[in-house]
Image (cartoon, rainbow, N blue to C red; front, side, top):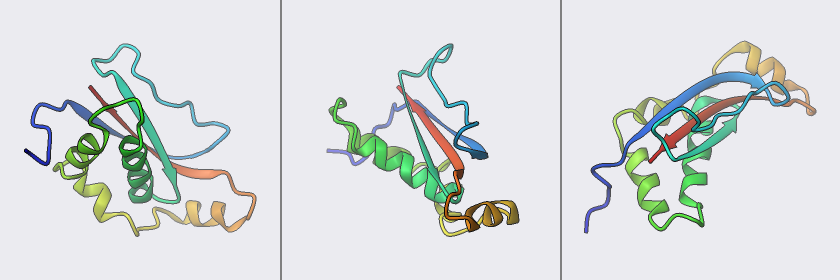
Length: 112
């Protein structure tokens, strides 16, 4: 049995930094995709990891962990994995200095 799904169609969307009260969200309307998750964290690598974890935990999808592994091992994902420990900007560091900060980096993954 294969450790990935060859015909999986997906896209990774880097939304960038935003305050949680202003982030518009991400959906599948007017796309060819059926599912979407959005991860948020202090940098894009951790936001990507959060989105992958959400896929792996999808209780309504039979192949959830296999889908997560396929996306995580893709060429497109390597940029996010490499940046997992990278703080993206001084703005982000300043925003997160406050304990009450709701400023995050958002990454969505759509798939079908």
